[in-house]
Image 1 (cartoon, rainbow, N blue to C red):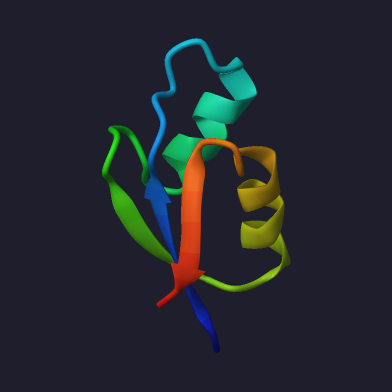
Image 2: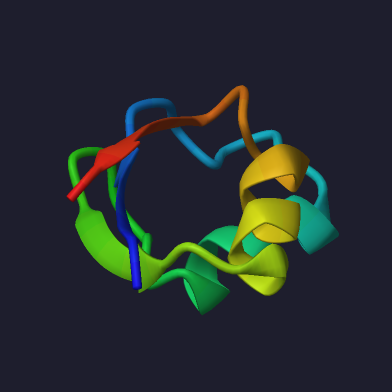
Length: 59
């Protein structure tokens, strides 16, 4: 199964509560934090919710 490397590149300050919760569910709390997640529908939905705050690449 494909993997996605997701990195937080912008601050969560000023973001909506649901966007902050989405970032935390992906394991992202501080700028520069990265996590590797499986490429499935749930992860793609989370990525779309906070795409303006993160950088996504293939792992």
